[in-house]
Amino acid sequence: MRRRPGRGDNRRMTDITRIDPAGLHPTAGYAHITVVEAGRTAHLAGQCPLDADGKLVGAGRLDVQTGRVVANAMTALAALGAGPERVVRSVVYVVDDRPEVLGGVWRQLNASPLGPAFTTASTLLGVAALGYAGQLVEIDLTVALE
Image 1 (cartoon, one colour):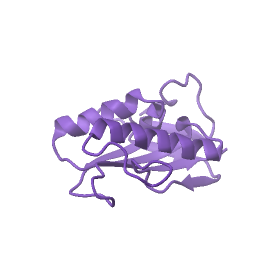
Image 2 (image 1 turned 60 degrees about the vertical axis):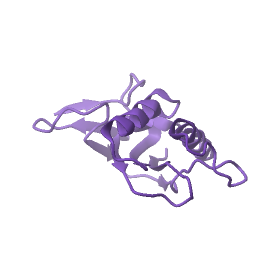
Image 3 (image 1 turned 90 degrees about the vertical axis):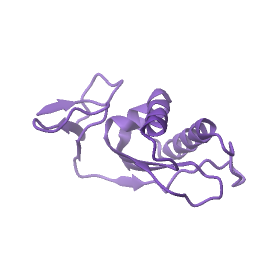
Image 4 (image 1 turned 180 degrees about the vertical axis):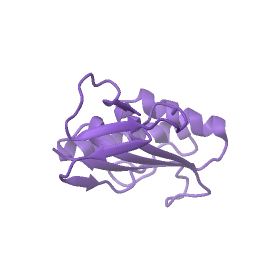
């Protein structure tokens, strides 16, 4: 079993431990298990590619929509006084099922300021549709608060 701190964080957080048990496949940078000691958690609503007025950003552009979802998630985390390293679960929904498209979104997310959020228990899903017309991506996050 391998234990590790979040990516980009050289210290172990005493209340969050990420574990990759022996016998499970290697991951693309995330942990199979995230353990959070008892405390407060925040469950963010799905972060959509909408601007502050509720208008879709980047119609037809998955990369632009992914960037907006990252910006919105960072705004929500800042409102909690938390950074992406405090995320303990992420679910990413993409309106596409091709591995190369899903992988591209995953790489963009990991290279973004939100990247440390994806070192934790994560799920990446290709779906048929999301809630807003033209929406191509959404991120659902669970955050351990200090």
